[in-house]
Length: 213
Image (cartoon, rainbow, N blue to C red; front, side):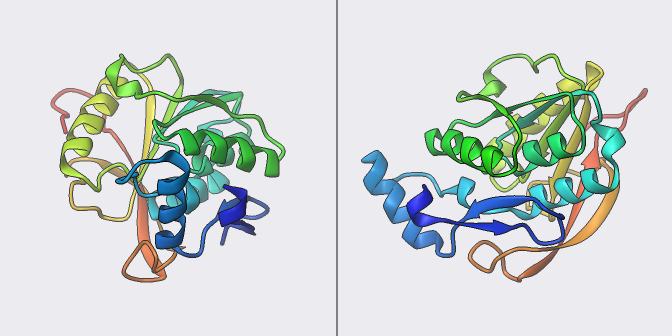
């Protein structure tokens, strides 16, 4: 992972650093060789995605959302949201991702930011939502089947009293009916997006009678 990334400051998030790649195809080929898989997943852990950037920006401006609380970051990738939560004062953060290289990325990035992130390498959607105060989900609406499964799980967590913060730049499967908390213009990469600057928002699930997604 270190051979194919560089440690860089994340734009507009003071002091937060990540190991990021410059060429998705190059890193993807390296992952294929490393894991011995002909069709390895895209190296989500090697980039700061627009939805995660929105959550991180939101936590910089609203640290009270996580201060002193138990936080879970699902589909963590690089660990950006998890690290941002700890820098905002979260009491504890546990990240989940199914990618074995994401586990390494989260560990290396946490160390670069002098924080400690717990990690679970499994699919938490196979289980009930974990006991926590806040659940973070950045960029989880880009694929139809995954988005449907993820959103049902997040809705279950919200119904159980967990504060859900979902970051998304308007992916195809982002549902209507969410409550928008904030919108940011985030600087990303044309390796990932169709523009270097994207509008990305943070949403939560509305609560109360008659609310459904």
